[in-house]
Length: 430
Image (cartoon, rainbow, N blue to C red; front, side):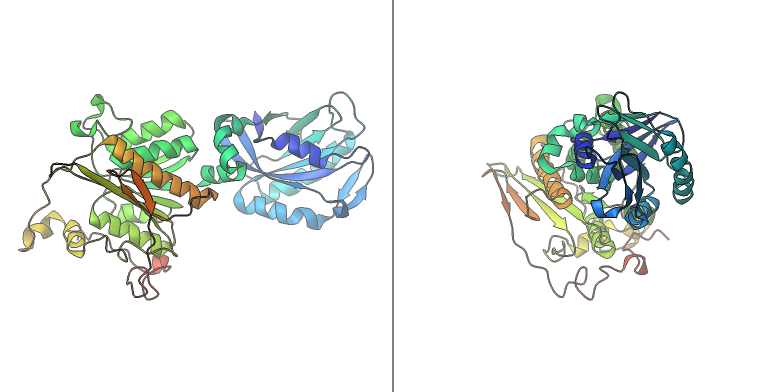
């Protein structure tokens, strides 16, 4: 079965825009296909109604379009691997919508042409009569089900906030989350609920008993399991159709770092200086937007102090080195292999202090990061790209920061924008 999916009132809008009371009319739809076993879902992404001046012939029973109208739409379908739906009307047909013999004959040649351009996905025809509609696979009698507002039923409330096109963009993004613990698990859960369905998860650690009070989705039975396995299960419980690639790996090692370069967006939910340096480098070198976040709780004094930050990494924003948020000695030490640590007389060992962690504080910072992501992706009006959280004063405030024009990591003489032409600063194991 093939389902043609319209979201956010799109079906009614198409019918209204394409309909003429006396003359046949047409439109071409671009749809994102999704195979589900033997079935397909074709989600309508673009609707192109034919303007009056693009008909070579237009009567009450026949139409012929100017070929220049359809060519760019068909080319876009071919480049993106999308499906085409050719829509037309029968303005005088009452009762059930029924394709005519003229339609049958015309679709044979059209189907042959479209399948040669985009052979791996189905293409359809949609017909509007006065009181009804019908859809079928192009050039055949196979019925296609038309589903109205299917996407909206899942995401109606957020579509009302930022629109169907923004929702569609969220669903197309490949998002990498590095770190699946305190802040990372919150980010992962929220992304799944927002509709993101293509994930790369990277974390080298397993769940420990002390993680259970702050790792969303983890249960006592998960102790000893990789954190990314727990995160993948969490995503699938929300989005069973999600595509999740999980790596039990350290992002500073070359195989994991190279995987990161294929993402559309990166969340940095790790507190090591080496991993943050690597993500900072990937973001600027490959032009991939990223968000770095962190939480700090100081319980040493008489009053517990807690704070956090959320920082976007993009070409127009200062990097973590510009803001002096990374320490070169820490980066060097954390990049060491165990053999290098033993051979280095200046290596003093890993920091042994166990830091406090509270899920509500993690969630506050993670939620601010996801909202910043929404602003960057959907245009949601929240322009700040650097936020500082003062937990004791309960303030989340934007901070203005300037790029360092001489920065060797994001400045004009850096590797920014060079992509594969420049090696990444990964840990060398040989």
